[in-house]
Length: 103
Image (cartoon, rainbow, N blue to C red; front, top):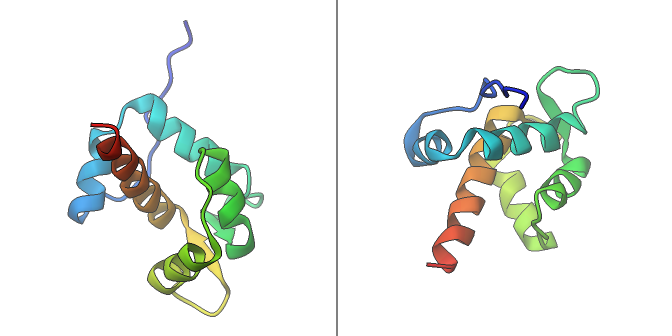
């Protein structure tokens, strides 16, 4: 069995970071893989236009209103880019909300 390294770079500040730390290495790797599909230049950002696709790769179907809220929260400049740490924290929150729904 191939050993998987723990993905680096996911922020650990605040509640979302705490949740990210409690995800399994496999889930963390899935988040990284989904992001990396759209981070073609390897700079640690994806275009906002690809955010929905990256979220779909993880099994989420964000609506237009949700994308607008995410944009307001995470897009920090006029270049419409989402940073890797922000994507990690967003997906950790969404995964735990989904998990809580099945409890």
